[in-house]
Image 1 (cartoon, rainbow, N blue to C red):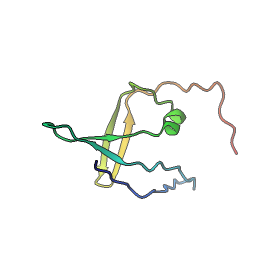
Image 2 (cartoon, rainbow, N blue to C red):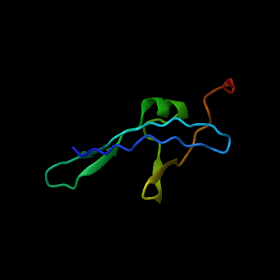
Image 3 (cartoon, one colour):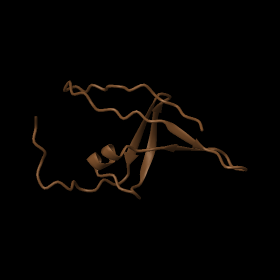
Length: 87
């Protein structure tokens, strides 16, 4: 199994807010007679935070060799009835 681990990165926006990172490993599945396939697992906590569900359509956006963005093609409306409290 091939695995690659990127170091965690903290991204700071203009508002000086630090984002949470989710380090993960790229997995390779090798089947006889077929090309290896790579899999990326999506952390359950992150999926729950953004309302990602099985079957949602996403696509990769390649920015450069070190940065990929995962873009959701159709974003459902938020399920929350009221906004979250600010700390």
